[in-house]
Length: 302
Ligand code: SF4
Image (cartoon, rainbow, N blue to C red):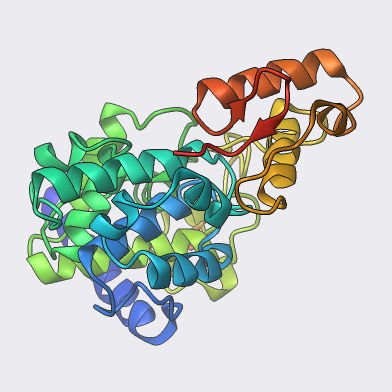
C-alpha cells in the first residue's frame, strides 16, 4: 500500500469509527465531560484490571465520598481499602491515595497537564498518563492499552498483537495512525478502545457487527491464528495467592471499624497455613493490613 493510500484508508476508518462511537459509546459516568480530570484518572486506575462496567458502582460511591484528590489524601487507609471492595489488586487503592497526596500537596489539588509530571506521580504509568491527557485534557497523544494494540494490529497489520509490553513497532503504528486533528485524535483513542472492549474482543471478535470490517486486514486474511497470541492469558484464580489475599482482606473489611480478627479466626480462612502465612506477610509488606503482637489482623489504623 502506498503512503497516500494508507493515509486515505486510515481517514476512512477514523470516520466510520467516529460515527460508530457517536451512536454506540457506553454511557459511563466519567465520559462526555461529566467529571473532573481527577475523576477521569480515578476511572482509569480502577479500570486497569477490572472491566469498566463493573467499575461503575465503585467509581460512583468513591467520587461521592472523595470528590477530589485532597479529600482522598486525608482519608483513613482502612476506609480506602474497604471502599476498593472487590475491584482486585488492592495495592492500587493505596497507590491512588499516594497519588492524591502528591496532587494535593504539590499541585494545589489540580492534576498536572504534562506527560512527565503525570508519570512522576505514584502509580501513574504511560497508559494512565496518556489516557488522562487525551480524555480529560483533550490533548493529542497516542493511548496504548491492550484493546487498542489488538485492534490496530488486526486492522492495519492483519495479525494478532503479541503479549507483554507494547513493542516499538506497535508504538510506531499507534502514533502513525493517530489523527492529526486534536479533537479527532481524542475520539479516535476512545473509539478504538471501545471497539476493542465490546466488538473486537480477544477471543470472539464480532466481525459481522463491526463498523470497520470492510477495512480490516485481519478479516481479509481469514483471521489467522485468532486468539492464539492472546495479549493477556487468562489466569487461574482458584487456589492462588490472589484468592487467599482476597479472602483475608474481605474478612477484615467485614469487621466493625477499628476492630481486629483474632489469630484463630484468621487460621480458619484457608487450610494451607504455609500459603496463608505468606499471603498475610505480603499484605503486611504492601501496607494493606497490620499484624498485632498476638497475631490478630486489622486494616491499617492510620
Ligand atoms: S473486522 Fe473483526 S477483527 Fe477486524 S476490527 Fe472488526 S471485529 Fe476486529
